[in-house]
Length: 318
Image (cartoon, rainbow, N blue to C red; front, side, top):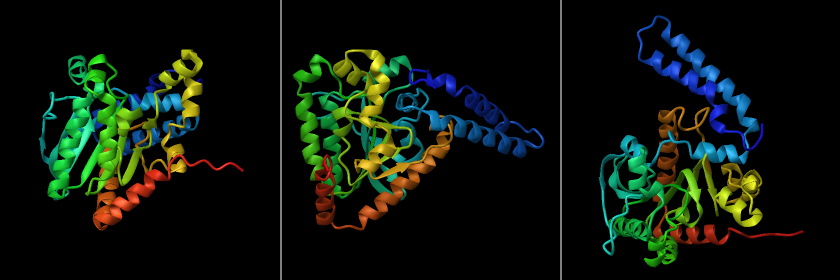
């Protein structure tokens, strides 16, 4: 299996089984349950065959899958009475960043997250999930409200990176990201971060300073995109596979290096194959993390958060 092979061609059989599964679920066909179980086993078998050969580039393609659940999908399923807040009170509202409050498992929780958009019109409206400075300032404004009222924060990360345009730079993109890093590190409420798709550079990190940083199994988290890395280091897009492997973008690699705290399993084929199972897995992981963190004092949270991020990047040479 070559690293440049299109991932979507690999999942052809899985998608066909999933289509049959959805049709059966809507039918009154006799012996339906047995056929559903058989199709689920076929999906698992096909994924077991494909999974060992998936390259880092394939993981990137799964994380970018256009049908993968986005932030608003999770909020619609897991959160009750979500109220979105708009504007950074300085310049404008940024649709690429969704922020607000809702009831999660019976308590008020602050949610922030990148939103890419499904249709072409919506993607343009949300700038493909790449926030401008006002997006990060809005997120911090809402997180500060959460701190004021003692609400925990859940951040859902899914972006290629921060908006790279001239306007974003004129309005202080780097300063907005740096300011978020500092303020989140001192936020006096529990913070749970979940990388649900792409975790690209400072655009992701600006809302990813947390007490627990979790990643979906087929998401990725990196200082730069594989394409950007290949362009800078090798000046050749044919080096994307090499770049992806060397960046150590997989959740398993990042867990081993201590960059993240846990990996959330995905259904066979990826989150887009069975979104409902993905929602359940994320729900379980987030609720467990919030329960653990809520039992800690504010002073303990801040000290452990400080030590967690200070410990990253340590290199020991023999």
